[in-house]
Amino acid sequence: MVTVKINDESPTGKRILKDLHRRHKRIVSFEETGKVPEGYLSGDEFERRCIENVTKFYHDKGLL
Image (cartoon, rainbow, N blue to C red):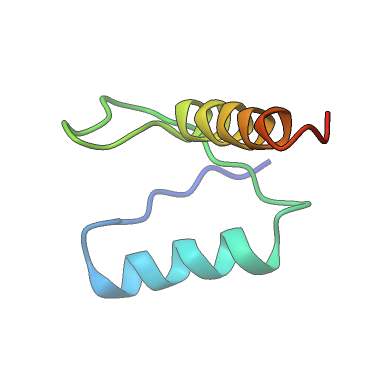
């Protein structure tokens, strides 16, 4: 395993992270190593809310 620090505030850093996440999901993992900025969600919180919303949608439509 290799740990890499990427400046996610620069356009190039954002592009690299987006590419890694999009193309290499199976072999790349991301760690949250700090505070989540105000107004943003952590990856885990985002995933949890998405699952809740999708589940509620299907329940409301009578599909679950």
